[in-house]
Structure formats: structure tokens, C-alpha cells
Length: 337
Image 1: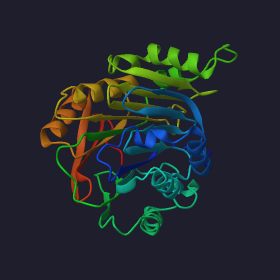
Image 2 (image 1 turned 60 degrees about the horizontal axis):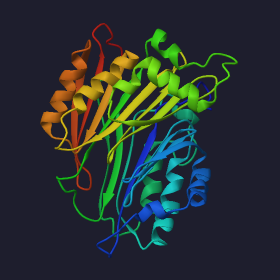
Image 3 (image 1 turned 30 degrees about the vertical axis):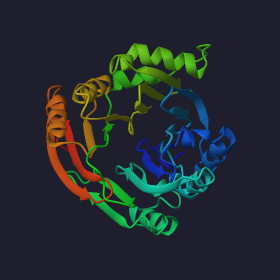
Image 4 (image 1 turned 120 degrees about the vertical axis):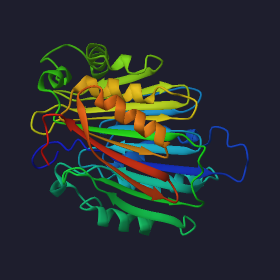
């Protein structure tokens, strides 16, 4: 728990691995649950629910989410978790499966309560130093950057490292951060006292009540409601994931939506629009990694259709991650910095 309130903005880490064997099989999915728990203990979070399919395993955490593919791990944690402490353990566990790290990407927005963050997250400078010290030398394509916006409270922090330059034919990632949630809608993510439900059944009720289940009707959803408030979900749609996390308390309310897309699906902009409508936030930021200009423009148009105004559009290039576009939006009446 942060000093002034709960920190909703997540830290996100993605690690990619490869093997000399051209057939990886289930790869990282061989990691037993005890090994995953040990890593999560260092990060300071636990598994509260899980769901998988033939492509990957997903875990809802006490602080956000974990996804394990045969050759990739994505972990996203909020609050005062120490996410970067998972880097070395994951690399070591992968090595026992004859897998070598070939790329890493770390992203986050601007913390609401930066003074509450522990080592190694007290500043982006400290985070970059920690990553540089814990990555093998063969990840030689490296870059750290803070992508600005027109608002001092919204910047996108990113570090990437890779063995080779990033290919263009891989899925792109969309990360949406929302603050100043509509208070009436945010109240839907509070549990009723003595409701007689567990986290799974209360989460299922929130998913249906808020319309989250309609963002991508093709998704199988694993959801969880925290007590007295808060909500997390992972969605599984074939080999694609989506995830939502909500901190509904007034004064530091926050929600995030993340999904992955490819050239073969054209529904991402509509999904982003539906996700933003669930919360009607005062401000929104959208970071897209390795997406085409057309996708970014379509997302901008979709968000503006629901009464938001694009206030800034920034771009940066990362040799090991591709092009990152960072857009910020506020309601048309909200021009605060």
C-alpha cells in the first residue's frame, strides 16, 4: 500500500526466449507452479486465479497479471511490487529448460505516488541501471527513453534490449491507462459488505454488470474481485490475451486495459473504445508498440468518438522493440496538466 493511496499504474515486463532446438514445444510452460510462486514471492505478489488454453497460461495476481507462453513471459504488477526482481530468476529458470533470453521490454506510465516506490523502482534512472546490471551482454541492442506528452503527469517510460533488431511481422501491443474514473461507474468495482461471494464469483458479477464481457465476446475470461474493492481480469482469445485492472477509490482511481493484436485482426480500435467506455475516465493514455500508423490513427479516432480529445501524440524508435506511439486524451472539458 502506497503512502497516500494505492498505486494503480502498473510496471510491465516482457521477456522473450529462444532455443537451439527448432521445436520448443511447451517451453516455459514446463515451469512448475512452485517455481513461479518463488519468483512472485520476490516481486511481492501471489496468484489468485488461473486459466489456460493450448497456446499459453494466464494467471490473475494479487497485483495484476502473469502470462506464460512457450517462448515468452509477460508480467504486469501494480502497487509497490518490485517487478524487476523477477528478471534474473526468470532468466535462470529458463536456462534450466535450455532457453536463452533474446529480448526484454520494460514499460510503465508515470506513478501517482512515486515517493512510495521501493528499490529498484524509486526512479526510472534506477530502474534502467538495475536492468543494465542484470541482463546478459549478448542483448546488445538497448535503449531507454521517457516519451513525453503535453501533460507533466503523463509520460511513457520504456527500456528495451535485444539480441537482434526487432522484426516487423510480430504482434503489436496496446497499453491503455485511465485515471479520474467516473465515480458512478467506479462504484461498480466495490464489493457489498457480507455479500457471501468469493473473489471469483464476485469478479464474474462485476464482469457482467460493467459490460467488460462485451469488450471481446470471443474471450474466455478469468476474473477476480478484491475485498473491499478492486478488480482484475485476464481474457484468452486463441493465442491473444487481454487484461484489465481497476483501482476504483476516489482521488486516485485508475484502470488499465491491455491487449495484443496482429495484421490479421481489425478489431483492436473497437476494443479500446469499449474498454474506455466502461470507465468514462477524465484522462487516457495509449501506448502502442510496433503497431502500424493506420492502427494508431484508428485507435485515436475510436477514443475521440466517445467524447475524448487527443492532446498529444509522441513517437520514439527502439531497435529491439520497434516504433512506440504514445497518445494522451482528456475529456473535452478537461484540460488540466
